Structure formats: C-alpha cells, structure tokens
Length: 161
Ligand code: GNR
Ligand code: NI
Image 1 (cartoon, helix red, strand yellow):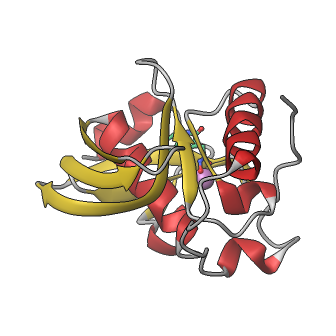
Image 2 (spheres, rainbow, N blue to C red):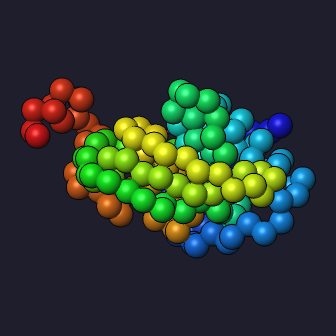
C-alpha cells in the first residue's frame, strides 16, 4: 500500500487523455487499486480515477461513506433525472463549481478479478460515478461547469436557485 502523487490540472496533460481499457486483471492492477484507495483516503476525497495518479487505465475507486467501491472498465448503462450541484476535484485543488448530472445512474463494470459487477447510485454516489468516469475520458468537471462557486458558501448557492 502506498500513497501516490495526485496530478493537477495544467501541470500534466495525462488528465486530458483517454484511458485504456483494462485487459489484464493481474497483480499490477491490484496494487494500483490498493494505492488509489490509500491516496483517496489520505486526500480526503470521495473518489479517484487512475489518470489522476498518472496511470492511463480505466479504473476508479469511490467511497461516499458507504464503503469502498472499485470499478474497472466502468460504463453508464442507464440514467435518470438531472440535478445541479457543487463539485470539487482533487486535481483542481481549492476550487468548486456547479455541474448538472443525472439524479440516478446504473454503471456496469468489472471488479479487480474481472468479474462483472453493477452499481446503482443516486445523490453523491451518482455524481461521483459520473465525475470519475469523465476522468477516464479526459474530461474534468470544469469543462461542464455552470458556475464557479469557489468563493461562495453553501447558503449563497441555495439562495440563487
Ligand atoms: O473528493 C471529491 N469530492 C467530490 C465532491 C463533489 C463531486 C465530486 C467529487 S469527486 C472528488 C474527488 C475527485 O477528484 N475525484 O476524481
Ligand atoms: Ni476529480
């Protein structure tokens, strides 16, 4: 287990690249997923995608407080509704902005052994699933941002809606 360095926007174009499908479910993938979880918890994040630690593989980890979820080759297979909420990103430190996301999503993926898994999420989990899958396609939340709310309190954001 090890903490890896989180890549930041503007410092490395790896965040803008399309990550490759995982085809080998080997020890190297297991170590990557372990390190990603350590790195996410250490940074107090709720999710982390492999490109954020400099690895162009389609792998993400998420923990919105309901336990660790590891997803390899994740794909949104169904979505419903739309909600606008504030997001942050460990690769865009110190900033927050609002983004429109589906209210509920279902994601098909594989686990670290290559077994098929499905996750359905709403609220923060749905947001996080979309945010992490975007990272795998070189997309950052700032690309979809409706409004920069870095200097706003939650109360001020609510008032505007
Ligand atoms: O830690 C994170 N918090 C967060 C808050 C609102 C919406 C999305 C996120 S994901 C982010 C971690 C991260 O950058 N993952 O890629
Ligand atoms: Ni992010």
